Length: 63
Image (cartoon, rainbow, N blue to C red; front, side, top):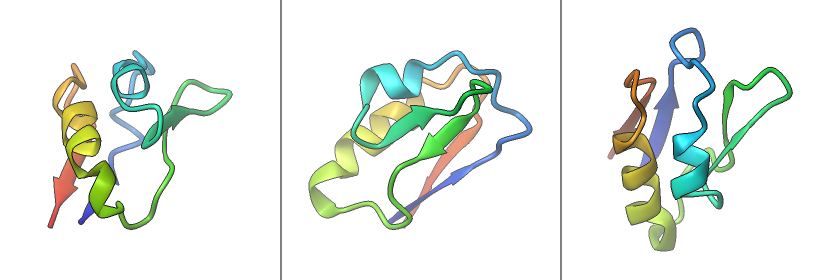
């Protein structure tokens, strides 16, 4: 599975990084950074949870 981030949509709320810091981070401009190009199996649930809490739907998890 992989995560698609719409960087133009990201508003830097950081909820994704709060929920799943092993998957998401914010750069110096408060834009989401996805830590893994392909999400390891053990981080699948945190990746989905982090995407789900994004208030502007800037993250999408794909199989």
